[in-house]
Structure formats: structure tokens, C-alpha cells
Image (cartoon, rainbow, N blue to C red; front, side):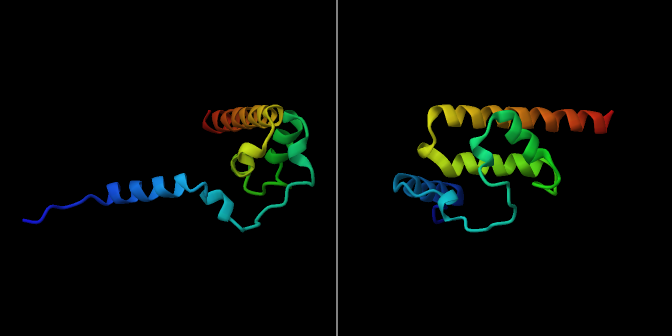
Length: 108
């Protein structure tokens, strides 16, 4: 019998080689499905969370807004200053709490 190799090991090895080259999946994304207001991610955490939870910015709801915020943080990467990253993480926590409260209301 021939020895089998796991596809999991092969794909893991591929991921490591990409990571080592400094190229990440987020850099290659070119889709443009939502349009947050210009300069939104430079504002304070409460404003960011409120805007991303609104139906005007995220028609599919706050979960979609949270994905947008996480994507922006990932896309900014090391280019974000520490205070800006901290403010964005704070907005992410606020939005997560809002989503959690909405789910608790819905399930009650």
C-alpha cells in the first residue's frame, strides 16, 4: 500500500509559504459592496459603532457592519497607529455588545 498524505498538511504548508512572503488575502480583495460615510473610521468608537449598526450603512444589519470594521482593521494592518487601532477595537467591542443585546431581545 502506498502511503497517503493528508490534504490538511498540504494546505497548511501552502498557508505558511504565503504568510512568509508578506502577502495576505485581504490585500487582494477588490469588491466594493457597501459604502460607509467618508472618514468614518477616523472618528470616535461610539460614532463608528452607531454608523455601522445603521441600516443605511449596513443594510443587512449590525453583523454586516462588524464584518466591515474587522475587514478595515485587517486591511490597515501594521499601518494603523496604536491609538487608532485601540479606538477601532473599542468600536468593535461596542458593536459586538449591540449585536449580543439584539440577539438576547430577539430570543427572549
